[in-house]
Length: 319
Image (cartoon, rainbow, N blue to C red; front, side, top):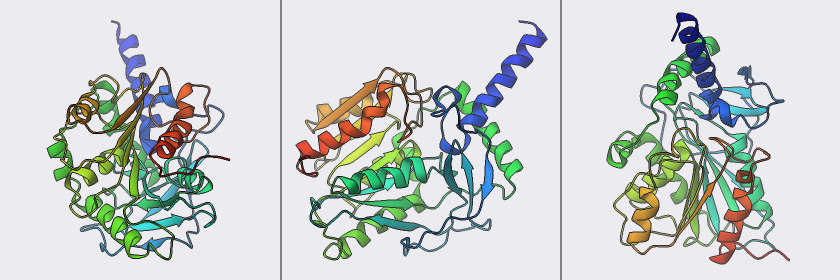
């Protein structure tokens, strides 16, 4: 390979990494090509319904929370205080079920719109109370340019060598986020009457890093005990399945550059334990498709999830 070809390849890899950046998504999965992939700082959006959780500030979190736009969506980073934002259905349509929604972003940023608010709105429209968890994040540089460089460096390695997370190691590094998830479940159950929620029907859905947090919440969340869990383009490493494990829903694209080629250990673990599991493996969709409209069948994951919730009685059938 010539030096010119090497440089071209490296440039391509760096650009691919930048596209992963805020949404933990790669270049092949950019959901809306008409939208800018450039990170642009924005003012912190108004969040009047956000409830501060009681987990305190992030230890050592000196950089303040900031927000930016990318792909026509919005992202938060340097979250040092966790919040939970309710999206409640019409009480006449409420099924009594609730879902904690955990956006992804590599634990450095949160895709608050595509993997948070938009998911919650869709659930509430179907009668399921949804609560977007803005969990605490690993610190990143304050300046946008430095942040972009740090993400490019991180994901250039990730794109070349997709991670194969070890479940035990993964959970050991998620103490603040796991505390935030447990606090979210506790708050929802405490205010269940006010929010028309059955305390025994509170589940969790997570995207990418949020899927890792969802799995950690099930495996090490102690009192959280989700009634059901959904892993959307998260790692599928095998785990030791708890005796009281809940039903599991999984969606992943076959061209996901991070988690599509590491086997299906998680699915096999759940199945071997004789626990309910549903797995959708889409031909195309890349990583980070979330609620973005795409021409790939991965866009249908939410409808499949809704049908799964309905089958189990957590969502009312459509009229």
